[in-house]
Length: 141
Image 1 (tube, rainbow, N blue to C red):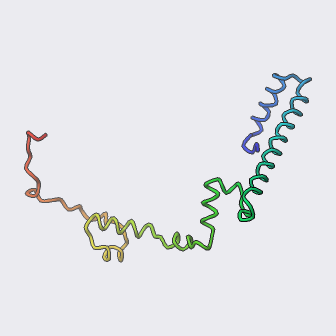
Image 2: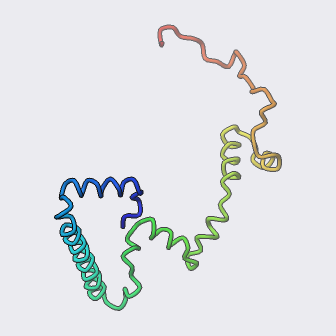
Image 3: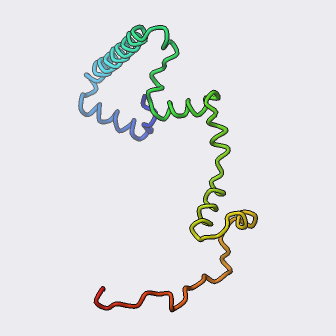
């Protein structure tokens, strides 16, 4: 429950508790807080049990931790019945990006995939001919 509290923070909380409640009342306050936390946990467990009973036997494997989206997705990705591992492993991002790059530059994807798969940085870029540009129109700008 308090996994992310460090030793310095714990000491600070203890010192503040002693200053606020005093050394005489501090044990009673600690007992009241622990009793309240215990009651909240019991209420939570009772609510979980009631929900499981209401759902019926079809949901006997239902876990409330599965309602967390990260846990649900992780569990579904590990499920072998769906075949998602084969899809994920069959997806080659570098090849897809090379094909997209080739399509943008107007190159044939078969010739570039047989080479290094990247852009040749040693070649100078091809500049368009001066005559291919549209005429400059000062009024349009």
